[in-house]
Length: 406
Image (cartoon, rainbow, N blue to C red; front, side, top):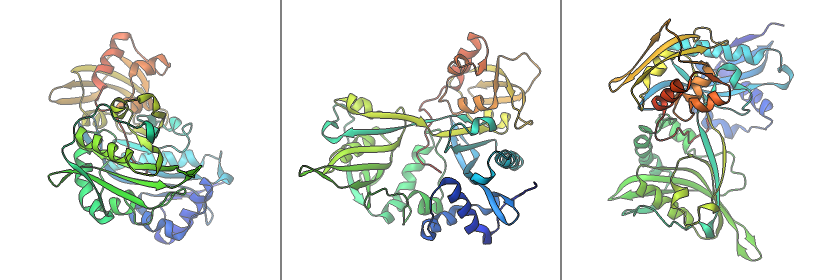
């Protein structure tokens, strides 16, 4: 059976949304997708048509993503779905191959995504590049014993005030945090702080709190609360949706504020960086329950520009033999030379120091995965000296983190 694979047209938007909803098992309403339509790039969508019916979907957000020591145009892959009636027919493979070919033709050296199912994307060359942590703590145990003194103040602001002030704070953090991507004004209004937010799960109105010193915002948090009682005592939950701080003082002050909200018994956050200092601030850190999960997956689409765009923690050289069955233009042997002035990567016929697949290079690309760990898992080949050199070069502080699902 032959299918048609192409970008959707504006008049096909509702059918595109409906197909995606069926694949993910939920019922959309028109109101829920008013904001999504504003940020969706129709020309970067792909849909598989079986006759008049859409049976698979995907899209891309075009943005600049921070990588260690720099930034790089990135294809943010999203909306990947296949109807249950068309699974195991090669539909997804054909769609992903076309999409990555389009990304390469556009000159984007990497693609990134959040995976709904982690077993899917390794076969398309994506590697797990960043982890996140879901945290929860009993408010009565959430006492900060060690934290930088905060000379500023926290104050509640409106959505409009947040939209005016927070992008500057985010951009200040983004320049040094691998995994963060640039947010346009439209993205802020229709994705990060939407007027009509989806997925409240019983939580009430949002709150916006801002930390500032001498009137200058240096951090912010948005959160929701859900009330409750147990045996007559308040038993509410506060859910942190996003907390971004440009300074340690701002971060400490914001957590102190959140831990002080009355009528709450539990403080939780879905997506926090693994290396944030909160654990070390707490008087009783054992009470902070953390669950680690995969967040950002990275696919190297063009090796030389990807490796030249980032910086390296140590000077050195490596010859990487990259294997890639899915994107044949990626496969090859590359010499990487990194120094104080930057990095240079070019094809070579020299003997390889490390042999690895494109997915493993993607996993290590942002500095959050060690080559020695991949080697111990049987995913990378190389001697101990080469593995140590690669880890020293690719390591980065802070660890990669993507604060927002896309």
